[in-house]
Image 1 (tube, rainbow, N blue to C red):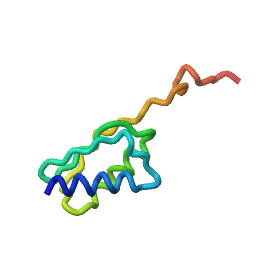
Image 2 (cartoon, rainbow, N blue to C red):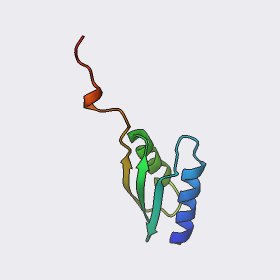
Image 3 (tube, rainbow, N blue to C red):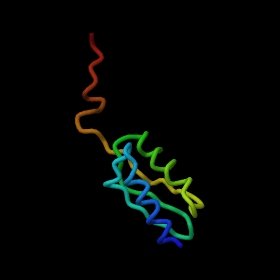
Amino acid sequence: SDERIKESVCDCLTDDSHLDAGEIEVQVKSGEVTLSGTVPDRQARRHAEDLVEHLSGVKHVQNNLRVKEQQGSGRSQTNLSS
């Protein structure tokens, strides 16, 4: 059932030591998992999708996770003069 899949997905994401799933939301409909919320970087975004797509009952993963903008990083911080 979708509820069982959602529970498995949530357990998998929260149990993974390489991922902070605190800001990830999970929805499941007919075996299709939608991930939304924010993660710290692109690697975490991809890692979350990889973890979920191999779980039993998951037919498709829609990864709507967004990468958080880092405070203090950006083009205005780049100093190209030497």
